[in-house]
Amino acid sequence: MYTKNDLQHFVEEAKQYARYGKVADYIPALGKADPNDLSIAIYHPDGTVIDAGDVTHKATLQSISKIIALALVLMEHGEKAVFEKVGMEPTGDPFNSIAKLEETAPVKPLNPMINAGALAVTHMIRGNSTTERIDKLLTFVKSLTGNPAITYSEEVAKSEFDTAYLNRSLCYFLKQHGIITEDVEDLLDVYTKQCAIEMTCLDLARIGLVFAMDGLDPITSNRIMPLHIARICKTFMVTCGMYNASGEFAIKIGIPAKSGISGGILGAVPGRFGIGIFGPALDEKGNSITGIKLLELLSKKYSLSMF
Image (cartoon, rainbow, N blue to C red; front, side, top):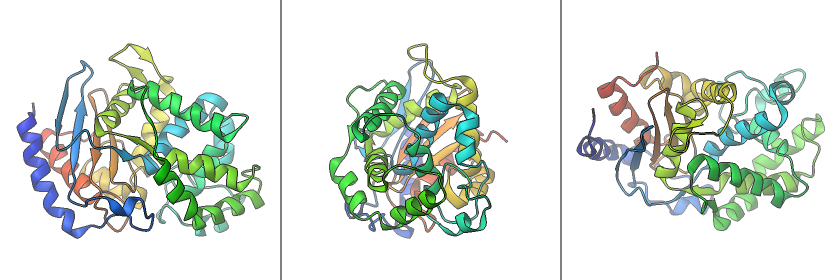
């Protein structure tokens, strides 16, 4: 089995690819990240954690939050209600594309991992106020990580809210077609705070472990989500989790994973362990270029692919 030295060696090797990527500077607060940062934590069911890099560094979840919000609304509403509003099919288009919405009849986002689908999912988080809804999601994240201190970055949330022109467009399109019914600014308030939830890659790996163990937290023996919901989420991670690079990722690496434009990657190796990675240098599709290289090295060396 791998050691901390193995991980450190892989991190150093993968870091060399940072020069081919760039940070997500179109959101000003994310543009401050150091593209050469790279850290990984692997969380095992017995509580053993093996890590490398600065695993105390915090980063925001961004699109990784989409899989967590999906699990929450599936528990709140059930599959039938959720999949009436959002589909289950992968897309070859960029994550923030509006084009497919116009081509689909009746209008429905293709899946919950693209921005339009994620906005439809966040719209379904129940609560009497935007504060109540983000607090509910935070409570769920705290239960997944076992970390009661997790919150969101106000700086990143504001930066995203102030520059969310494309997401506003998606919201208005969805509202025109009855997919969402609330005030667009209220929805964006919840969504940008959801994306700005902040944690270390240790926390991220703990979430990956819960998904890897089909919704059971083996550290506390608490069932955080029903088995069938964990499986639905893992399936979306395989088919849509890495944006429009999901097919290539499945072939080269072959584990359920979800990425975010902060450079985070959440991995869940079924029945084995959870992985948390942060590497802010992104490829042209919005995935961590160093994080993917790191996972590729790991998967090849230790036969992690589920296929």
